[in-house]
Image: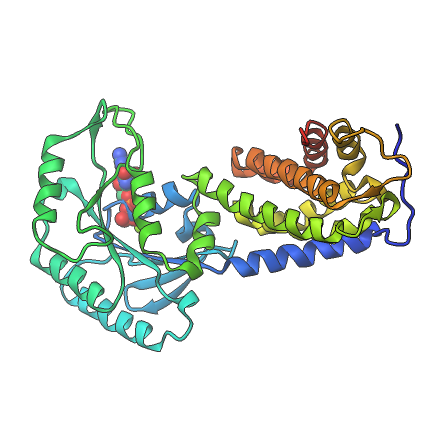
Length: 382
Ligand SMILES: Nc1nc2c(ncn2[C@@H]2O[C@H](COP(=O)(O)OP(=O)(O)O)[C@@H](O)[C@H]2O)c(=O)[nH]1
Ligand SMILES: [Mg+2]
C-alpha cells in the first residue's frame, strides 16, 4: 500500500510552513507569560544555588538585571518565562526597610497580575541556627503586602534520608514562631547541592516546588511549569492537555471526511500543537528558528505531513485496513495528529535530558528531524 504524495490544492510550502512555525512558537511562548520569583535571605544562604537547582539556570548570570529598588535587582531570563527578584547583599535592619518600601511601591503600582511577584522564597541557612527578630518582622511585612512567603531552610544535611537532628530542631523552632509561612505554616527543608565530602545528597527540591505551585496564581502557572526542571511529570501533563486539544480540533476538521490528497489541511493545527508543546517543555526559544526548520522539513511533502509513516502504520490498525479511494475521517485525523504530538513530545523530552550545549547542537542540527521521524515511525496508533 502506498500513499500518493498530495500535490493537492491545500499543500503547504516549506518556506510558508517555516514562517508559520516561527509565528506559532512566538505566540506559544508569549502565551506562557512569566513566572516571577523573589528570593530573600542573607548573602551565602544559598539563594542562587537554589534557583539554579530548580530552574536549571543561574538567572543572575544568564539574565539581564534591572535595579528595582535599592538592594533589589530584577533578572529576566532571556527565555522570557522566568524572572527573579534577587536581593543581592541583603541583610536585615535598615536595608530591609528600604527594600520593603520599594516592594510596597512595586506592589501598589502593579496593574497586571501577570507581572507581579508570584512567590517568595525566604532562605535561611539552617547552620546559622538563628532566626532573628528582624527576620520575623521582614517575613510578616512581606505577608502583609499580600505576597506569599515560603520559608526555606537551606544547606540541610541528611544521612540515609534522615535529616540532621539539629536542623530538624531548628525547623521546629521556626515553625513554632507562628509566622505567616505559605502555604502551610511550616518551613521547607532543602539541600540544593550534593556535598561530595560529607556525602549529603540533594533533597527537598520537589517539596519546595510543590509549595511554590500551591501559591502561584493561575496566570503564572504554565510559565512555572515551563521554567522548572525538577518535575518533568508536570510538563507531561500540560503537554497531554495540549495534544488532546489538538486532537479535538483535528477530529473537527475530519468530521467532514477529507481526501488523503488534502491531508495538508491538518498541518496548521499540528504546527500550533508542536509550537505549544515546545513552549510547555520550556525549551529555549532561542533555538526556535532551527526547530521550525526541522519541524517544517518533516511536515511538508504533501500527504506525508510527517505522515507517510504514520498513515502506513495507522492503517494496520484501522478496521478493514484499506484506504483505497478513502478519506481522512475524524478518527484518522485525530490519530495522525496525536501521533505527531506524541513523537514531538518525545523529541522535546529527549532534548531536556541534555546539557545546554549538546541540546543546542541537537535542536539546531539534522538529528532533531531524524529523531522526530524515528519516534513517528514507531508510533503505536490505535
Ligand atoms: N552543600 C551545599 N552548599 C550550598 C548549598 N547552597 C549554597 N551552597 C554553597 O554556599 C555558597 C553560597 O551560595 P549562593 O547560592 O551563592 O548564596 P546566595 O548569596 O544566597 O545567593 C556557595 O559556595 C554554594 O556552593 C546547598 O544547598 N548545599
Ligand atoms: Mg546570590
